[in-house]
Image 1 (tube, one colour):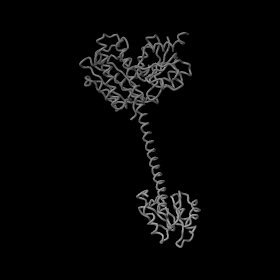
Image 2 (image 1 turned 120 degrees about the vertical axis):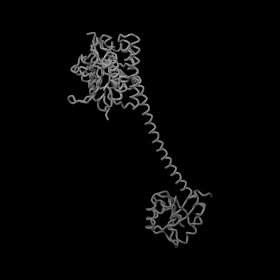
Image 3 (image 1 turned 60 degrees about the vertical axis):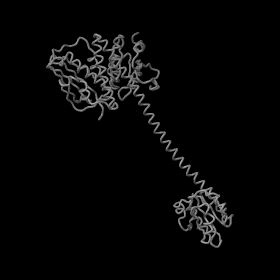
Image 4 (image 1 turned 120 degrees about the horizontal axis):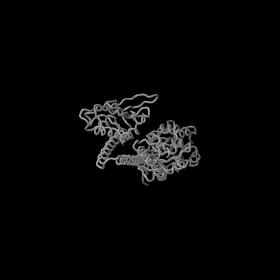
Length: 351
Length: 119
């Protein structure tokens, strides 16, 4: 018969010295090694340390007498759930003890017939291999379940992200719709409308780039202002604390600054060589609420004239950061145009 | 002429709706850009109808929808999301998709303000 497992190390408990050579000989075909232990020792620990696939318990005393029941029970307690083969001259005695062991069991008649021992030990080795395979499959199953779970979470995140992108895209189209509608219905010439539309779309594109560069985490206010002032930057003094606007606010705020700058260049303080603009922002408390106030102040420009109708820029300013009737957003003060934006806390990204 | 509340956190989109309402001969209430602002307007102003953007910054507009529903004020949603993103309670409501089809906006506004303009 072939060896069931080349690495099997067998442990035999309570084999009398006179029988040990026979054990070595009869088990030579199935075991790599055979070692012996006394039930007076902690045989369970010994068996586990040697990782014996099955423990043989010799029931007969040195003179062929019946086993000591107390000694046997101690050995079985130690072996608990390990597989055990009882060996005795009296097969009936071995059979009567089988039920005393809580783990898998079998019996062999003494003297041992090597082929029979090989078959029975082989069965236990097969059992152990099956159990090991089972445990391995369980680990593999758990690993796959974990991998599946994390893949599912990843997919969910991607699906949500894709949905979010579609939403942002539609929103952006609606914004462009709004800008186009206003730009062509403001009563300007086609050439004027074309240049205004291009300027506004460029500002929106810059804002979109700024907002997406941080993964929609918003943009620093001074960065938005600096990007929008462009060529007029050297005539505009910008000052204020570091503050980050929320992603959703960046586009509109950018467009507000774009409109203010374009108007200052076309009709306001920047339309003359000596005019200047100051933009400053600061936090202030109003009752229980805290606001960010952004002030755009023009000086030394041409005489200020109130426009006849509210154009795109003024409508946007009023809608974006309406401060209420008691705090007008814009003032066409003769000494210079002033615009005051009040941004609520929910427009500002937390640090 | 009807008074129509506009709720949208995007000023540009609120502006467009407001412009369209003016064109249709109605008056805009708001626009409100946050849930808190919208709730305040619903509680304090005379409103005949409302158009609500579903997403308001970190919030949604469903508390506002609830408040309007309790007062029996007709409203429609404006959204860039699909209709499947709606809670069951509001799925039957009219929805106008972004970007807007102005024909659809006109039809929905007409339908919303019909009870108010008949008075």
